[in-house]
Length: 165
Image (cartoon, rainbow, N blue to C red; front, top):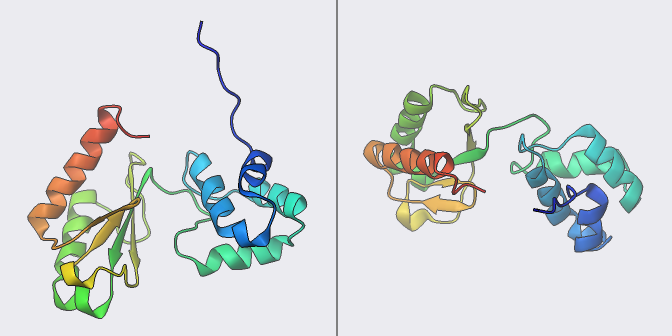
């Protein structure tokens, strides 16, 4: 008989990371990751505020500064396309067109199946292989329309094959 584990909680995450403000970004990341809609929920922030003794307004201010955090539900996979000048010069606009065409969404939107959310970001720090996008924690460079289609198909196949965690 398989023993089920209890779902992780905000308190568990704070206990794992340590109740120090210096751990706040990692704690917010962990909380967002534990939520199936890849976002931070009001009740999570309420709990975090109580546990860490940080006003909720400070938490919201912190998470709104970083594009990696979201208060609205997002897809299972977050696609971030770099908009830096080197990426722009090397064709990021063409890559963005391909992403919008393939996914059928605009920047800031999530596909109907909840699989992908398309976002743009400033420099990802990999200008040597521009244009660049990041899906979750993986960076893809030297992008073309064809490469984008293959990458998205591969990520979707991994998810459909049960390899997505």
